Length: 328
Ligand SMILES: NC(=O)c1ccc[n+]([C@@H]2O[C@H](COP(=O)([O-])OP(=O)(O)OC[C@H]3O[C@@H](n4cnc5c(N)ncnc54)[C@H](O)[C@@H]3O)[C@@H](O)[C@H]2O)c1
Image (cartoon, rainbow, N blue to C red; front, side, top):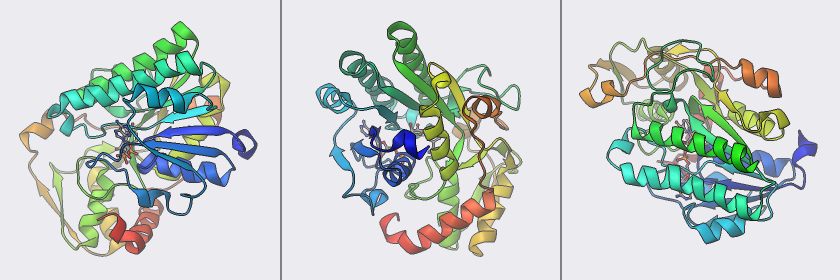
């Protein structure tokens, strides 16, 4: 893979956030020329410490995805664009529907249209979410699972997926859609529990607090570690067959919610768990138990995630013990 990325010009929108910054670290390691565009909007995971160690090797542009002129300039000479910028909280999306629409739809349409005019040859990877699916009717969940999103976030992510596919069909842009399950790992935001729950649970345990679980914790989730996500994104982006298609990016095996929380406590050796009733507003958007099928990604770009939950959480714990002051 090193040969495919060495010397390549790459733009990462949302690159100061969790997933984008980890992609940036790996790309710098492989000799790519990385530009990050990030607006550092306060409630999301953008964090300058996330590029610690590579800050002198990349170009950082603090700016907004919705700024058409800026985006036009930035996409012009790029080989690959990883589009990670987003309003990320599906819970918040009902309270800030217009901001969600603006970033998650209009922002992405701007990147696509800027590429259409200035750089139709670029490969453009979009990070979508399992939230486009809504209630799970059949597991393991394939890319063909029905899409009936339950949140404004899910509706807008699904709309954006359709923009990416339409720009491929209509204008021949080289777009790829990757649907992520529940990600966890280094450089994830730890400020609030609106998304990225493993991070939040880890914080509770590190502060010797009580982790609150809705219901009996029996719902299944598919947690994927950041290094595996990064590898999936990088492999997909250099796979010709992936252009114009959607792929699942998950671990492919699920664990109970309660087991994930117990693993966190096991690793940290502090904190405790309390089971509480579902709050009304949460139950309405609960998707049900979930496990992804990864067959498509495995057969098209030979991607198989490797990191076991306990070892991923252990690495995360070591990181946040050391660098807590940058994330709390
Ligand atoms: N974290 C999750 O639970 C999860 C799950 C599935 C999919 N995803 C998707 O993965 C992608 C990355 O998420 P993440 O977990 O790294 O989140 P994150 O909050 O850590 O990163 C998102 C980044 O986007 C930036 N951003 C937001 N709006 C912007 C704008 N208008 N212009 C420029 N930058 C902007 C933020 O400042 C932040 O740095 C998103 O598209 C998200 O929808 C995340």
